Image (cartoon, rainbow, N blue to C red):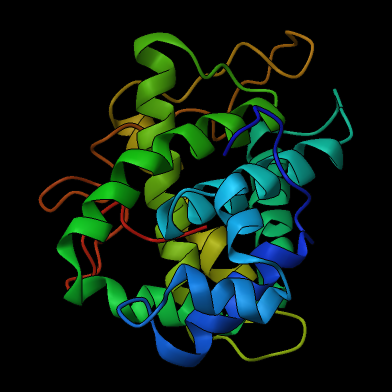
Length: 235
């Protein structure tokens, strides 16, 4: 993008991007088709987004901003509850473009380069979700948390992909289980205490730190999906 500000999550160009993707898949997606769907001159779309990958990045940033804007600080809630809230609200913002997001998820195994690129993008978003939940997201400890939260997010996305219920009850249950598993993994590694709530309050016995061991074969945590490369899901 040509500016540093995130677009609105309802940006017509981004909405058109997901509709085109839902209709033809990632391999058939072109910027010309997106421009036509959005009713924009191709030159105008190019001025805003350099590539389909840039549109994915812009949408992720827009969702980050929307989740953060809607977050209300609550010193009385646990870190686990705050993480549950921010991730479910993230899904709320993906829901209008569900068909396109699910199509992208199903196309990823056939495009390893895209999967690898998304894997490098995900930690940035997970750090912002940690920030929204009032958890430290910088330094080595923050990197471990972002990686672990990414494992939780992928498990939740896999459930959401199959969950066609109106209230997303199956997705919420999957997220609840994933946070439980991450909490157990963190505790087994001695990482189960979180000192900083939204205002630095003590929040003992919460789900703060989900390290890279969560979800890795042979370690306690979330079992990885054998059909999806770790860290490669969109959103």
